[in-house]
Length: 364
Image (cartoon, rainbow, N blue to C red; front, side):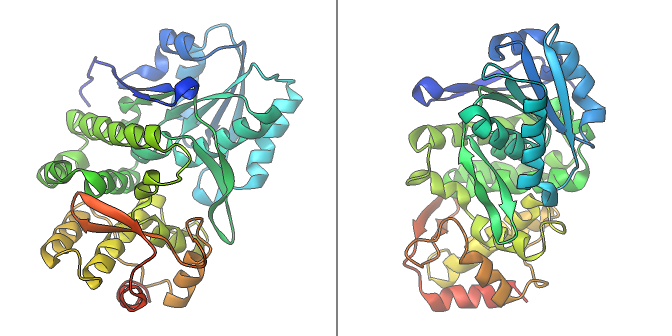
């Protein structure tokens, strides 16, 4: 990877809870950035058994004379549980950390969600900083303040909104990302083009090979544009009372896949990829999205090496988990439906027959 020296900055505008997203190479080793965005003497560094051996030493070195306690969790979505958040709380208590401490989340979305939830609940809320090391976390989960854990009954059913002090997206950490994880992150990038930016989707079609080859300029571009879109939407609807729900395009289907398979067979981004195609299929079944757009979405997902169906999950199991989704309202499953590439809307007013045809086509 060629190193890019520039640091790009976007702000999530939320009044007194506003914070910057910094994107660049080598950020995790820069003491000046931690001095700007991390206050207090005590730091809990949360990571996992995969990421910590790679990057924890660089972060600790950049923290200078602060007291740093490390909490290393097991890796994997099936470890995103209340029990592991409780472990983090135990570490905070055992080390007598006060409300002026800061939690650093060094890792992917699972680490970020758990560290953020621990920060949201410890002493009714302490500061935390996101240091995402996967593409999926850098473009999506580290931004926006959603924190939480899974439950056997559903994905992310337990959690809180708690905004970080800053997000430091170091693109250099993507050099060690397994290819499967890289592909999973691309699914969340495609989502942004589908919900509101058709030219971005066009760009992705033209540059998918460069992304898969880890071209640093291409990766930096998609991280910047994805964060820009998400920062704008979150700034307008922090608590998902309206517009922010469009960011869940494909996610109701995806969460059903993950829950039905025990959170240990699919990466989140893989499930999102299948969910994006299912949302497009539903739109087509509703008479909205033209077949040519559905085919473009399918082709790009396949080029990225991502799944478009989940035939190992039964229709009955998928529907059961979809009905437990957080977005259910009045007994109706609220879905994000794309009208075309670059335009989508939120609806409970879709024909049940169209949903049934979609489920039958995409599940087992």
